[in-house]
Image 1 (tube, one colour):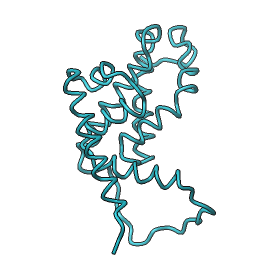
Image 2 (cartoon, one colour; image 1 turned 120 degrees about the horizontal axis):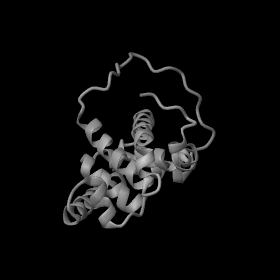
Image 3 (tube, helix red, strand yellow; image 1 turned 90 degrees about the horizontal axis):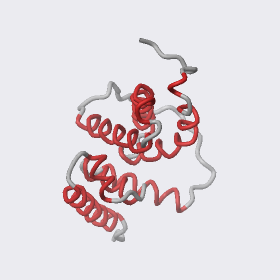
Length: 172
């Protein structure tokens, strides 16, 4: 059965998407290790699932629902060996940015380090420290006990510290 955007049961969905799109995309980028295209795909797929569940979850917790779907899709996506991409011999010409700020460089370093974590650790760190969710909500999104979520986050942060401290060592 196909649903139209004017269904009475789906009021507020467009407003929710408009209000939360950039935040969801940010979380998805962190979960995918900085891959914007995969992040956009994850957010879109998550929102499709939310659309069908909207009448059921709109009055309860649509944010928690879509976040859980996003984390689970990211974990499933991380297990794939191939996403249909093919390497090319030469990259297309791209314009050089005028100025790269320290904040952008630091964000890139963090995203690269996040990409090296396991999917569960990455999800726990992103949800706990980037989204500032309580441990119980992180555990719920990951579908595991609170202690396990806490362990994933702790190990992920320890690994991030190691990775980020390795990248700032002076050469010479």
